[in-house]
Length: 99
Image (cartoon, rainbow, N blue to C red; front, side, top):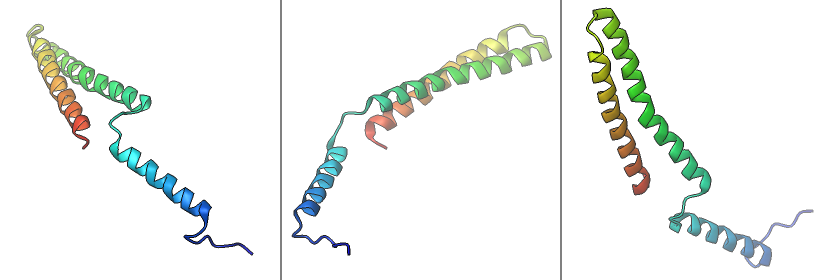
């Protein structure tokens, strides 16, 4: 028969204490793991690069369609840099505030 551990059992007390310490460390620790930091760098890279590329491609297509030179491409590139920078800024603020 299996024995159900009681509160007086030293092994169950040690496991409960270890779990409490682990949870407290997770709550109080300000350090992020290497995987979390690398994930954040990758996510920020995509946030900064993707909008300018997409808007430049869209601008290039519109320039070819309308025949107006590289004007819309340049505007799309500038708008993409602004949008990408804003998205990266918001993401960094969310991460530092712990949301």
